[in-house]
Image (cartoon, rainbow, N blue to C red; front, side, top):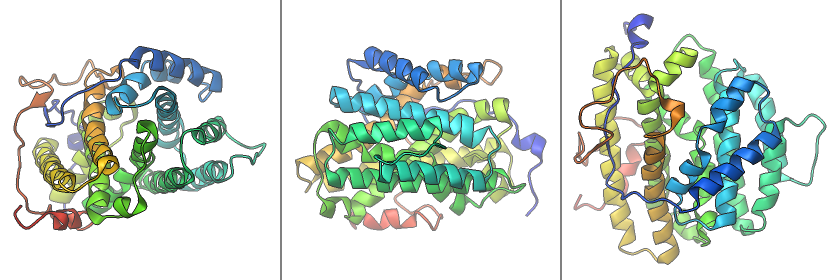
Length: 360
């Protein structure tokens, strides 16, 4: 296949409106959560570069947490906000822009996982990120059951394996296939441990049999994917400006379909909206027979998708003054670009649509 030129693929694109029928909500303690989180983050000294510290300080971790988990109880909600701060710092200073190899990231993430598996253990070589995550893991024990701690630790394994996989592609001159990219990005964006926190922050517990239901597993993966694709759509201009980063859904589609970024953007929005519609239909199907904890979990998944977009729409982190302006319709739209109930032609996720009832 003929490759799209680097100059064409690096083209900045207009902002697009998002389809998300989930109503907005926000925890009333948003400002306090953010202030306490930033003060804690600065004490952890996760970063030494002053410019990076300034960038992290205005990321509005409290806004992200309060919008994605507005139902949360105060103390576990604050832990979630601190967790966001560590992941953002890890992403910026270790994963994306430091040029770290997959080998180095495998070593760092293995130390992180050991700290989470055995938080009583210590190593003189621990990084500030490992030390901070160990402390958060210890604090989680006050709010999470052993089963929930296991789920969260397993989810961190999903995340760290994705980070290493992502690093291997960042060192490559090529781009992954669409099928590989979808799997990679849903893992490396950190959504697995974030959704594992929903029941902990909400103060309820979902039985294993419900979490293992293929429909619930599909809804969980759909949430990871929607957040990862939404991030690609609104952050691509920033990534190009800061790091000339083309590991993005738009650029993968350019390569996959031998098209320019504008056409790839149309494809990406249609794909994203079809997945959003699937989430609507499948969550409604599950809700018909769900007990209270499962209902809360599914609602929490939808709120994460909506809250993430609400936060991103105002976050200074993603503003590119020199980039194209938003479309006339603004940040939101009322109807999806694609509401088909047919599976997307992406083998790794096509099974999601198999979970729908025949009526759909």
